[in-house]
Image (cartoon, rainbow, N blue to C red):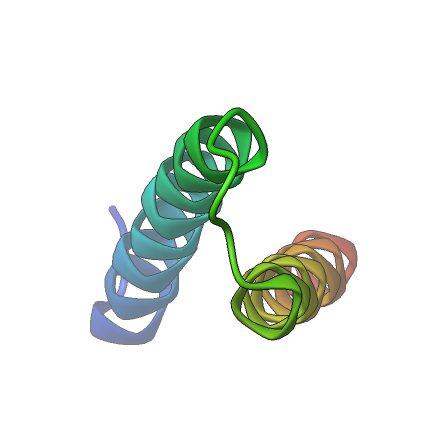
Length: 62
């Protein structure tokens, strides 16, 4: 049986994975556009990296 804490962690992990995938798609789309703001792209990549780090940390803790 999954405890409430484990279920919440599992939900959070899945949410992070979805956001990471969403950011990957957005970054791919933005890099194909000629008018992409480099600062926006940098912000997206930084957010993606932070999410990846949180995913790895959560996986190591479980």
